Length: 246
Image (cartoon, rainbow, N blue to C red; front, side, top):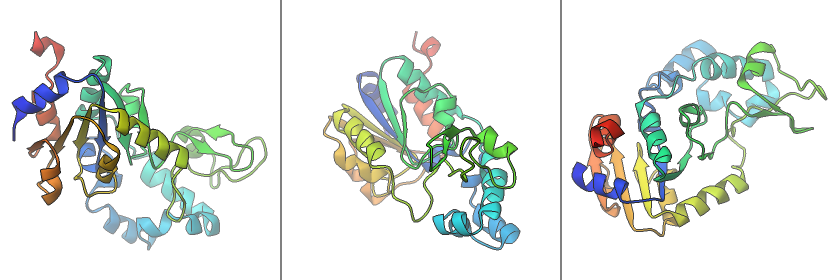
């Protein structure tokens, strides 16, 4: 683990793209990513999260689907964590150009990051499939049991991609273009064989820096690898706050 080398990479670039993976969300207070969330969901709803969070369940049992969406996702979305604010500092300093993530709880956006590409959608952009009007998470929370568009009365589609649906090709293209133009690819909270980490195939830049909580055989593909219990601590040491830099 070379914190010094990671610092050189991060402070020497003006075009970093970050692939922000699941392990970096551990301090956001989001129940959705707890290890026992699947067990708790099955005990409460009699079904796994994957079964509920599918296009089939959404269409066939919408009231139960939106109960799960409200209670287990919207109400338990958590708050931005330290990693999100470090990325915000990097963006403010003109080093970080984009964040690409499979998460849809908007932690980095709520921390103030401006260019966040969420491959699997956004819980604050629930949409009417007929007229295209966008509704906030608050609207979904307030309109029970089945939220409908206040313009055309169509059942609203959640702002995230459900199992059985295709990812938005325009969003994927945007992510691939950002990665391909980056000088440095910062991969945090996932390995390079994961669905998110595999997007490193679009990278044409100079250095891949990887920060994660556990080792993986694909780590050898990165130029700099830092493994430790706390992604936050590694990033903060490699990218100290401005008052610490002076």
